[in-house]
Amino acid sequence: MSGVDSMDAQLESETAKAETITPEDIRGLCNAWLAVDRDECTREEVKGWLRGLDHGEDGTQFMRRLTQRLRFGTAGLRARMGAGYDRMNVVTVTAATQGVFMHLVEDLGRAEAVSRGVVVGWDGRNNSEKFAIAVAAVFACAGVRVFLMARMTPTPIVAYATKFLHAACGVMITASHNPKHDNGYKLYWSDACQIRPPHDRKIEEAIQENETPWSDYSQLRSIQDVFRLEHATDCTDSIIESYLDHVTRDLCFRKSKQAAPLPIVYSAFHGVGAPYVSLLFERFGLPRYVPVECQCDPDPDFPTLTFPNPEEGEGALVESFRAAAQVGAHLVLANDPDADRVVVAEEVHGSWRIFTGNEIATLLAHWMWKNRPEPAGKYCMVASTVSSRILASMADAEGFEFREALTGFKWLSHTAMEMTNQGVKALLTYEEAIGFLCGMTLHDKDGVSASAVLAELAHEVYEQEFTLTGLLAELHTRYGVHLNHNGYLRCEPEVLVRVLDELRTLGLPSEVVTKDGIICPVLSVRDLTQGTDSAEVDGKARLPWDARSQFLTFRLSSGLSDEIPSNESSSLSGKPDCVVSLRGSGTESKVKFYSELRCSPEQILEGRRRLEQIVEELVRKCLNPEMNGISHPSEQ
Image 1 (tube, rainbow, N blue to C red):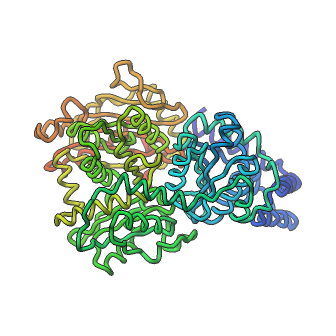
Image 2: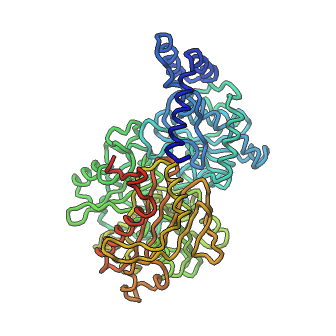
Image 3: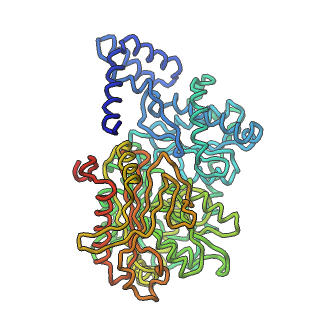
């Protein structure tokens, strides 16, 4: 059966089921929900459904919300808030926490889980505090020591606390940069990293076996109510102080500060980062930032932003640029709402340049290497496999180690930890989606500390009458230009599986011919769906692979690297100079493409043209978008 036929059959099945459902069936499901839900907001929502049934409304639109379940993955939970088992609410958060507790006991043993305790934090979104109370209540009433944040905090603070306190796990209630109607449940395990398989599967199984609340937690209505429980502790102030101390000790490098302060505009995107970035600026001896007043206080409705995501580009930074113009500032820093990511923009010659994640990482890598504590020590840097390879080029030139990992800090941090355990200090860990970890103060991306590091770097650069743009150009001259062309196409997951399975059967492309007639041979292919890599002697992929996901990487020769002077491209000799990856999104109906081409500064214009043509032709050969109903965003 084809993907289209399968979808048609599924729709027919769901339609048939809907036709057999009676109002009494729906009424029964609503009453079953009300029997376990103690939150007045969602109870009132379901009571409204019942009133609608009384007035003759169909009610089948509520069936999914009362029969479908959220799935607990490596990213935890993230969904729209509201009543129903497929949404974020007190019932689903309570069930998730009961499942986490049961797996924690299975994994560590009850005695260790109870004694090490858990960390619980929350951001400024609607219902975050309420959900954090539900999490803390389950653990505390089960006899587990709970280190609960008394006020909203950035995600990196919870990641740090989980590591610093050697906790059994940490839970952060946040949906990061999602729209205002969403919330989420992020989980760190006993190694203070985000969970990896098979923990997600085992937790999901435990949730299914423990969906009914173990107790009536409704009497716990505030953070202070939780602190009255025997096993709950307020760790907020001590953890924040410890975090500030550790970050300052590990990442503040400048001994003398400039006399003339450099104005830097900062936005928290209506999130929780502002006071913490302010405290770090003070610890680093930096002048106060210029706040984007309308965005620096937490506001769960994100009134000035359509999407509270710094990656959205110029549209998301309009207020920041306006604030910069008012004070004559040329630099902008912005965190996402839970402050685990950061973006940088610089005005040069009257135009704003928003640095990509790869460009920010290049600047940070240079700074961290320049300021490494022991010049003769062993160091490494880690990047996701879809991020730029410029760190690999730097590693070849400077003599440190480079490692790549799968996308996501659950993999990146684990790789950095492994290197640390081998006596190799990780200086920078990053992914291209503006997620950076400088040093190893914690085991997740940290937009708070990265903001302070970038501000300190900028002060030194501007003291030398230089710019970040100029420094980046200098680094490209030194290590080679690494051009990127990333994006996505709209594609249903089942269609992508069918298309790529057919491609594997027929044979993967051995070359790409650009519109300009340039033949670019494919030197090797890595398939992280099947666990193969033709570049390896044994043909096996070195990165973890997953048959449930679609991930192909093509390594090609563009022909441009042959023209780069040898003193500028020693790292390119005998290696592919172009990489293109196709990856199915795990959360959206998209196939994402990531690409990079290495060239000299003199080849930038030709390199961009060559890279775009390579990607266009490879996408055509692999996906055949027109035939398979795969579309570009502009075609929607």
